[in-house]
Length: 480
Image 1: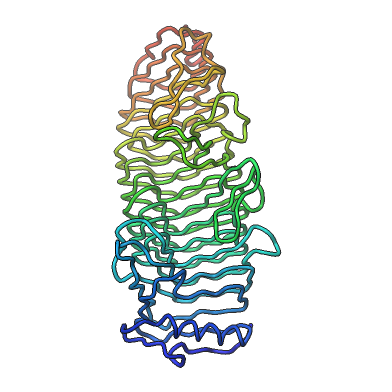
Image 2: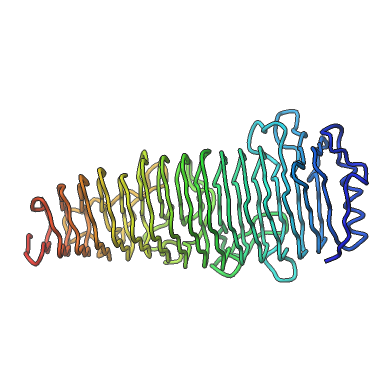
């Protein structure tokens, strides 16, 4: 990388918070381009931007560039529209490019926008192709504050390294990846993000769509579905939406994530877009090869969500069959569902502790639980989805089929072991194909309109209440 250091104050940039530095930054970038790269250096102070335009600082097709802020340096965005909406992005990097390094860069809006609008603190516009992408990006010890849109968004980028990123009071996501690959994140501290704090999202379309500067959609899961990515040490507090969301993802590992005060802690969803009222606006395939470990979710409306929406019963498995492993999950003080798994297959959870309601609903295939400690809230196993259309509720969740008899319940594949249920009633309703082993409960167990249920090594305070069911075994004894 070219070692030239370009001090923006030498090009007329003022670091006293006065005036408008747009022209000075343009001049510094022109010098950077003339030198074929180098370092753009911002001494300590506030660099005010009042011009409304695409970006305060634009690197278009430039490689081998470092942007370094001294401690206390801030790019101060003071360029909202008259209606209070955003007037442009902070730092934009547009591909193709390689070797981009941002160190200690702090982008802050002087006033928070009136609504979600134009204004990412950091925006990386690549393309999911070796020749057109932005590769080897380093976002180190950076902050995006009060942004009208995201803290940072990466689209069609490769080999990304994010360390100690702080998105604060953003209108949209804190840190968003779309159609990227080989992402490494170590340290995110999201506070008051208006949407997901961390999002790995790639959209579905019947054929590839997208261009540089827009989001991308694929017909399948591939290496550009945020594949071969790792994220550790994620903290999300306050705001809206999810602490983390993974949609249309492939080969992603998450570890050490703590979420509080959001609508939901962690969500993985698959969907088909529909134009119906109050419906799903985007489509995503079911994520595969996803591993989440050491997760804590508390004081949210919802905990862990894994679901498919607007997916018909005869849809291909790519729309609803996940490959997800969650290990060492703590869920506490959730207003609604601590764990909500619906209309999916391919989910394994182990070493789970919860004091909040758990619901498994309209399952399509294998779901496994190992070592669940549930206290003071019910565990509901509700419905195996049949082959006939089951309709949708107003929020696009499935309506359970009302089976007239156990014979009408579709065969499932539900395996539970090592359950410790304390003051936690267990309800088994319209389930066929359940194996529960080596578990105990001090609470009521009810079984309704179910069949082929095997409860083995199951210690109960009282015999289960069984109604309208058949082939129900408890510790080798046929109950029905």
